[in-house]
Image 1 (cartoon, helix red, strand yellow):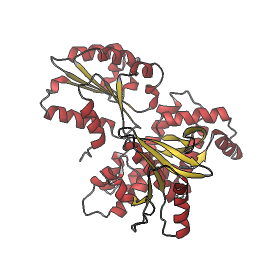
Image 2 (cartoon, helix red, strand yellow):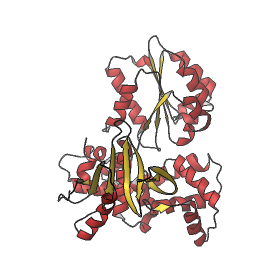
Image 3 (cartoon, rainbow, N blue to C red):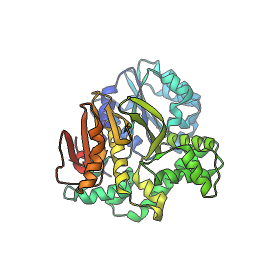
Image 4 (cartoon, rainbow, N blue to C red):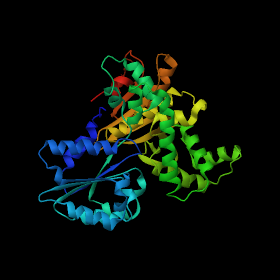
Length: 403
């Protein structure tokens, strides 16, 4: 089976190799973290590093169950260390009891280069976050980008058809394999399995949640309202109006849990004039459009504008941006992206089409209120170039395929 190279993630791993930093790879279940480690290990071997100097343990493998005890794990790793630098890969480390102690002990050894992965943000909080402070680099892994999705198919495939498939089925690696094998009927069952595992194992069990129906209701609400401004009160009111009376505090707790499970990402709003982050009325985006389609089922409106927004948001994250929603007076800019490497800032508006003059005027009206000189980009599915007055219009497919 062809493995899609995660070029951005591999580049960071290459740069961080042999540094005095713990490499922490995070991401939702089945997003490809294990495959990323495998690709990197193959690179190490090709560069001349002996297989004996690579210790790799996947804690989802039943054969490693006894190693989920931190003392057993620590002894096993020490027993297998060789002369020279050793590359230690611990996959899904949150399944190990007191894994922080193992990480701390391995970190202080000069002959260990340490790589760990986890499926949720839980293991990046509390004591472990304190332990890691100043000692790690985080590589976030998402389902495939559109460029990675395209690379899995023959060159003669039509881009517009591939893009439609991407918006419907999403970018989980196994989903792409099923699409290539023309086994679309299996995709629903696969995605439901991933979703239920995340909700039951990563969220409900870890947070001792008993009201699963409320958790499901909140998740479904967020899937149905991607890109819309929301709040705990708004969600609580909605649930209560549907005979599921839920308190503000419960909604807040469950929203946090869904973020920990990495199903949804919350985005703050930023006052462009005042340059301060607004603490209320966030937006939520879903990590994968295939999950949204499956969970909403026949209720799924193909809200193309917000779906495109969702895709752009995660592409901006992949390109190493800090992303906020822009607010200026009574208008809004879809995204403010600040690149963490270059410090470059770009404003983005996303729309399906601006062929209609009224739609075009509405989309750029927010840009026209901004007085600074940062770049302004309008992304649509249109092929005609609508650039004007310093506003750059780009076809969204072309933008997603940019290197």
